Every structure is written in structure tokens, then in C-alpha cells.
Length: 171
Image (tube, rainbow, N blue to C red; front, side, top):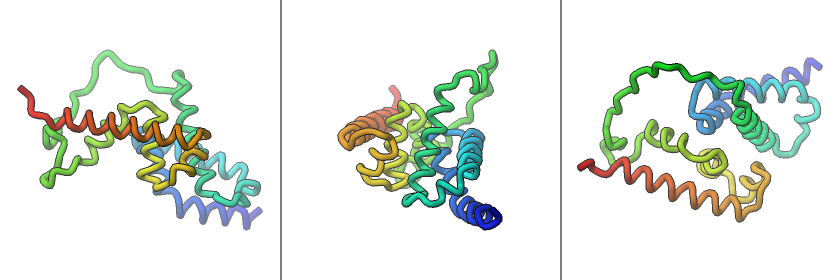
């Protein structure tokens, strides 16, 4: 048991930052990302003896994270409740959302990523942040490779349109 706990601690310590970043890209909120990562790590610890023998442990944990995020989105009673008064939004550094080099800044990108439907967002995160192949992404999402390709194309097109619209000068 002590060896199992030691192996789990070593695995969790080595993957925690990447797990949190992936969770953040899925949910768009650092607090929720911490909650998701914690939820996944608790589930992982509970079944560590069985799960630790899986061939692709990182892929298994990614799938656990994705399912935890989707599960959380399906439970409206777990989410925070809106209030009558909203805080003032922060003023963007650059109205166009671009840095000096013409590259879309991270905040703008994450904001537009948050506006995508969950499946398209998950496809982009898995394909381009986690650097998974089409086949690996299809396996994680439990769908066909064609679905991954079409969802990726639609998500990228939506992102291009939204970023171009945000960059266009106002009349």
C-alpha cells in the first residue's frame, strides 16, 4: 500500500501542472480547473492500484478529466448562481486583442475558446494543446475520426471568423 501511495504521489506531482492547464483550457476558469484536477486526482487515487497498470496512463487521465468536465457542465445545480449586479469588466490592453507582433494574445484566445460549444472546444484543446492525433482524440472523446476532423474544421473556422471580427476596425 505504501508503495502504491508513493507511486501515485510521484505520478501526480509530475502531471499536476499539465492537468491544471488542460482543465483550464476546457473550462476557462482557474478555480474550476483546480476543482476538476482535484476531482480527477481523488478518483485516480481511489482506483490507483487498478489504473496504474493501464498502458497509456496519461491518456486515461485525460479522458477522466474530460469526462469530469462534461459531467460538471451537465449539473446546473453545482454551478455558481448569477447575481443581479455584475462587476465591471476589465479593459483589454489592446482593443483588437493582438500583441505588438500581430499575434492574438492569450486572453483573447481563451475568451473566444470559451465561446465554443463543449465538444468543439474539447477537440481543439486535445488536438492542439495536448498534441493528440486525430485517432487519439477520437478515442478520448469516444467518437469517430471523421467527427474529430469535422469538429476541428468547424471550430477552427468559428475561431477564425470571431478573431477576424474582433480585429476589424469599428465604424
